[in-house]
Image (cartoon, rainbow, N blue to C red):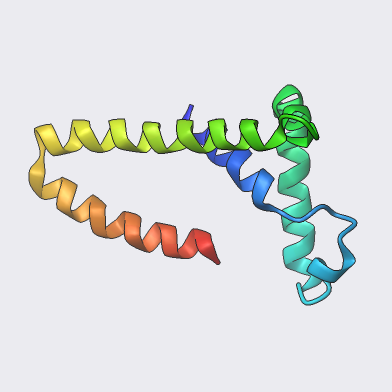
Length: 104
């Protein structure tokens, strides 16, 4: 389930394929890979993608998907912290690194 919401949040943050200004400074290889991944999200989550594109409720759906992603992360952290505190500390630092990489 976390992957579903990660993909939807990622999709919502990407520029549309026809946004020439955004993609102008992106290499062809990266643009192609991003557009291929966007197409996969559209194929496997068509109803959710349509909801994200809705002019009246797209922002709400993006917020819901972001909240679901965050709550999944929180619940997975809670399990680890309870059972293995030393692993939890390592995961904390790894998540900082992962989030820094996602931002780019």
